[in-house]
Image (cartoon, rainbow, N blue to C red; front, side, top):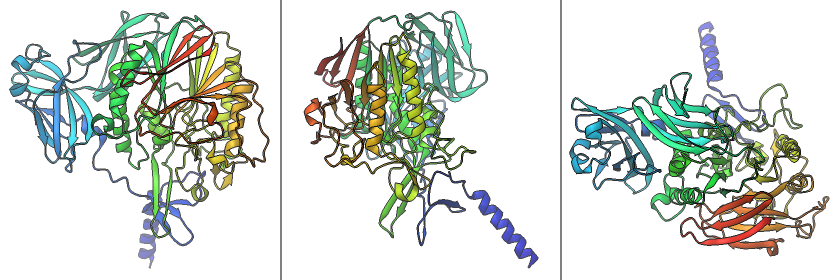
Length: 624
């Protein structure tokens, strides 16, 4: 009996070890040795497994050198298809991309080979590897159904009759956090290396070998273009960026705005495993050609809504790769949307219901943390919703972090404030599981916004403030059923550990409008997305903003305000729907679109162009 009791105790301890701690903000969620589960009245429904077929890292670290070229083992036995390949010539144009060769290689059970010596020498050696003994080759993985999975690259050397795969910059370099004092240059390498950046006669180095590199450049002058060189072992890559003007200079400049680039229909690059790379490349090229100083891109970069960290990282990589050749020079500043959702999913077949919650642990395995891992963004937002009125455990961190998904930054006399309306997002089943709904801004984020707007109102160098948020305050096509309207039903609200928020979605919308419109004179417009179309909404106090039977206090607006919606970066389109404010909508368009905002002192003009056809969709002045 004593032995049996000991075994039982050991088994219990083992179960406790395997069980995952559940954030106190959820209801009816538990964990045991079988995984995370949803507790219903009479049964447990376990979260679906990630069902990973591959590791993302294996897609960019697969190459080894041979006497003939490079062999790849993606460690993905289910993968059969084609590997397209071609050299990348970093000395032939500003935006280096692979030029695919006429031949390709078959992929069988995840294994393939590039015969560099046989096919890519002589008249096809356009990077001069035969003389220099090194080069970079790009490759594209296409499965046997014709779907593009990933665009990779590998640096290689050649000596003594042998090719060798070398440490490679597999993502970047990217210009981030641009200011009048410098920037942060980030990039990812295939192996841990001590990389460095040379600029303006100075070398900036890593503190230790790493794969993820974020190197801050400072000690430079404002409004000046600098060439920077990234050094990874024997490979050197040169690009440039221009520092921002001194705050308050009020020199004319342009910035660009868009959102919603998740996979589109039509095949090919319109869907490179979760991202519409075709339209994003067009957007990046148009922004650069219009001399945009930065591109704000707020939400739904990818398909998301996945249970797998590996697949989510691959989708993010494909989005970054689509705009990478232009991101070498100007910042692309992503914001958080609902399709950035990384979930636990509970499929209750017996009850015919489907529940989905934000993945946890929140600190390092949530939708928010995964977004943070993939981008380098300002870290000046609120901490989290901990210590709010609804915090179930004030002595412990219970909520996801706002780090790098709520933030603000400036460029000359413009401030951009990025909100997260899909924080702690529960895609389905809120009454049962608790969680935050699509488009609801929670209390601590509201208080932070109020503080930042007050700060910016007092800043003499800032004339204009833009609020960027994924969800429109007033939806017009595709999301009238939710966003900040829910067909006029104010009962929708966040739920934390079974406790409903006091304020409903429309009341919270009005609190936001009160801060942005009534209590701030510098705010110009809301830059939103979510709905896959472009339109301009002129918001006035006379505009109908409530359902007929609305019983709560109605907000009076002190001035005219604007909502520029541009969710037309490649996701499948939404047509216009009838709303109480439809007569205030200007130039609703389902064309792919990039919003270009021209700032000249106190004047702000807007141009909207189709990045595919270059057609002018709309043009107007917001301030003069």
